[in-house]
Image (tube, rainbow, N blue to C red; front, side, top):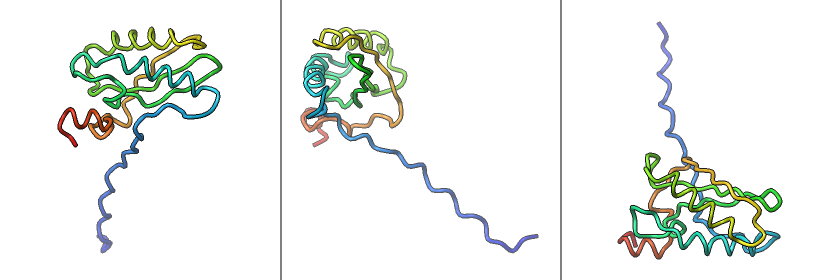
Length: 128
């Protein structure tokens, strides 16, 4: 029998917050990211009357030359329109001049929370 005290419980996992999305203000892709963000603001979540940028679903862009990968999430992993929404987003991004191809990377970590919404969206939904 050991007289050692039981080990303390492990701390809860740390959730790394993704800051609210904003296009890169400078650099080689700044103008394209601005145009893509404008296109994305025209796409609405079919279940929530708000565009996907103000909802906080966009996590950022990754570039390889003129090809872009959009990292984004949804408000819930089981969203039934995920595939349709991804195709709509891909088509919109590929209409931006100097974007050769776009891929959509749905990520679930960190999970979406209302904290990710823009101030505008928070006011619309009574969070601010």
